[in-house]
View 1 (cartoon, one colour):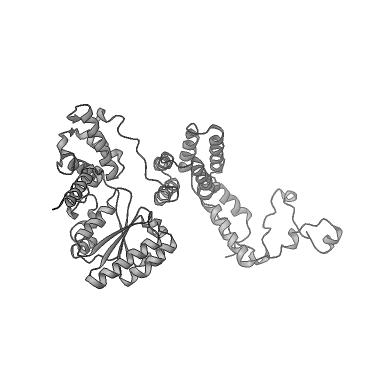
View 2 (cartoon, helix red, strand yellow):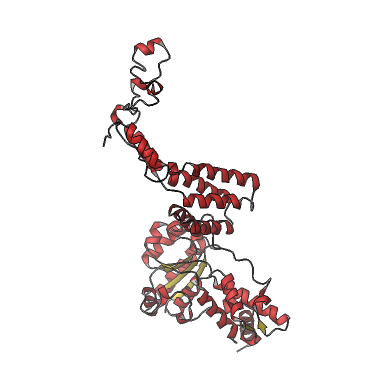
Length: 443
């Protein structure tokens, strides 16, 4: 080994020693990957494909710190294929074409296929995805894409159809504790040489604060151990972590998967009349940084769409909560949001008004401009009255407030029923009243 080779080796060793703990502790064997047994347990489809070195083009979809990059590297280590990495953030079409050309050359000259790992593949725009597609289709590269975004939203349908999606889950508390313990005792790559121990409750607190993210957990552990060394502590207790554990940042993106999932859970909990779950999901949105105006807009919509006339107070209360937010701001408006949320969840439910306007809208679109019946037309002039405008109109106030049996729809639609109130809440009385007033139903 000459001088330059020794210097290069020393530089590489120094880089490894100064790398972040999460990078140093990255698993090198599939057996060491925590928390993804649904994909990697013996006999599972992806595990068999990795073991047999026949991994097809795949998309690894999961939250930050769940092990997507680790799984890609472990897959490459178990394979005879060449491994090439692209970052969708830093690479454009020229870099992609260069990577594909290198893959083609290696395939032609050495008979080796290429595993092309594209990190954050959702950042590729349509043109970049289209440029990659034919090479995946032809087998020039075997794609391993990693994304935190729902692939059905983030990737072109054509590219998605040529890759199998595997979803990685957020790491459980037990999985994170196992990862932290391994890093704490590993003397070669981890923190074992520091001879610092953590109380079980302190270890659990680090895991809880990491919100399923191994990288975040290991960074927090590294900070805690370094802090302990500065204070000459050989054991870290829960109080020692005060000020070191940052406020938990919830997984949420106003245009991403987490946003839509939590919003859906919020609405479904309201609809299911579960005030506890509705409050929880509402607070998940707000604590993650969602604009309260978005939550209030959903409450107002819900009040009419899912409660309607079963309790007409619902809409007034939801609007009042919105006005309270505009007047008070946060966090004081939380009282009004909580009141509206719990009231709407507990209120009787009916979507009759929503169904009614949907069906009426469909008839308007299907039948076009049906003529207004002559009896319902306004007749402000003598000539119009002579032409029959307003003729035979029954004035309800002359008949005790109700012109019983009268019809008001266009002749083609006479007898149609759009609004069919439920028997829930206030609509039960509306149902009884309409049954007495309406003419016979036309199916």
